[in-house]
Image (cartoon, rainbow, N blue to C red; front, side, top):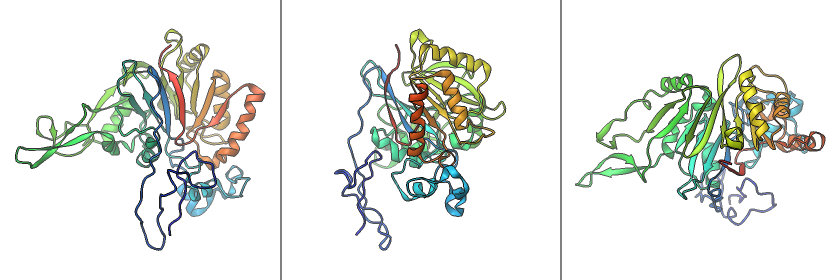
Length: 387
């Protein structure tokens, strides 16, 4: 019979937990067998006026395990790729272990904000890359999410925008029938509207070029009823790379960083504190260099106190378009947040998740820095949206 395993990401016991014990896997000799998805209780929304963050993906553009490393075993030659515990490469362990924290989808996060009026939580996604579909299926059940109201896009590369078409499945639509019971088309349900896609001019232009069929008015059978089930989106162009705005009730500040040369990728600061001078959460997923004006602003934010800083750290060695691990640590030393999490990680080029986190934990004793690698499915504790 098929094996029984625990599918809970944070489970550490030797036997399957109660919610996963009855979940059958695919039998290699008989093909697919009936699958019952585990349904552990979803983590409830944050308290009123607060927001939390779910890590949808924490990895590099190729995702991990890397295709070439698996097929050609190329990461064998990298010292950081070999796990001390079992001598497997990081990509091998990620391939073999479905619960591995070395498995990393394209970098992406979901912000969940509970408004003070007691209304339903606002859900804002940052980036929808090539692996978005699988990443969402794995991470959203943790918080019971099944939709988003807005998408922030950092830049126009494939790992940030090539999953946009699949966001149609996160849009709540209902079937519409005529008086005789014949099917007519689709319309938004439960009071939902278009998905807001927010970025700067250049990135929105790249999205229009890639998805021309999404960036025009939908074909209507009649007013309010769409002929096809396509993503209904609304482009919102930022006035400037440095802009302050609100999405789904959550205060957001965008700012530019350089993702190789002077190519702009946007960072985002969420929430406000210290009378608007500070932000509890700062997120920078793709960066090689921080422009002087942005760095000056970030240092001002740091004076007011950053609770969580999430920043790019692709590899141990230098790279032309991303921070290395040392680059990220030096950046963290300048801003000194209460907590720092590293994203955009090429696991085999940084090292095994647990082993690297043991290494980074020493920074707390030596420098007072709380730094760890993020992992897919990680849920951060709630933060106040304003102070």
